[in-house]
Image (cartoon, rainbow, N blue to C red; front, side, top):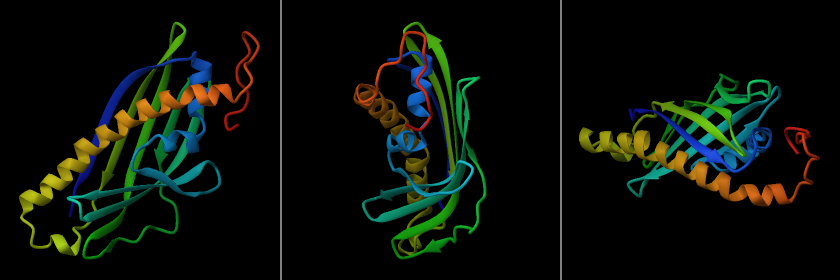
Length: 193
């Protein structure tokens, strides 16, 4: 087994007021587009989605993890949560010579705080999975397998967080330019436009 178990908490300033920042991140497709190594593989009813995490480790081994989540938007508290759920059909664990696939756990929470003309966003991201070793790793020393797991659990999750901040902030001016500016005191309407 390869143990993936990591959580990272970070905070950053976003260049817009709290209402606008909340609106910008409320679209799950937009939010996930800024998460490196993660994409949406399926969407269901009731704001339920399946996320897909994929990396290649040591230049040869593909790690595939699927996690079911539900999007929970709370405009009154300015929080966005991706909550872990279990959806059917279950993800079958599969192993080949150079790849492993399994179901995992993904959760995140974003809390939006007023910070003058900007917004301070506190973000917590958690990932867990226990994929079996690819068959090509059977004779690999346990120390090397642990190194791969450590790379995934610390380096990759930090990489996801850093890319999320940089990419989402960089793309915000383009998103804002495509939308008409609200009247003073008027919030952006609709969470998914």
